[in-house]
Image (cartoon, rainbow, N blue to C red; front, side, top):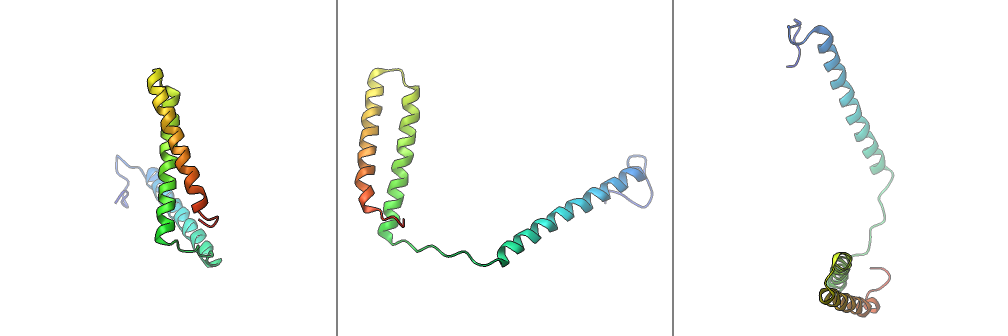
Length: 111
């Protein structure tokens, strides 16, 4: 316990009251947060998204992987100083862009 009924040398009565006040305030903030979360939940359920088929999920995963690879290549291109390395990164970027273009028609607008 932080405070007892007797004020000690370490924690005076004033410090004890301040701690109790802060504890009470912290609990007040927690209850407000819970109240807000409950209000959000009671407003109604959000419309659920359509479940993707295994093939659609695989296409989305491939697209996300290619986008991450593209981002990494672009970051590396900004830092490269060797011309041969730059050419290799540019060829890799062109390949990733080509793969993304091939995936584009396969992905529907809903995905």
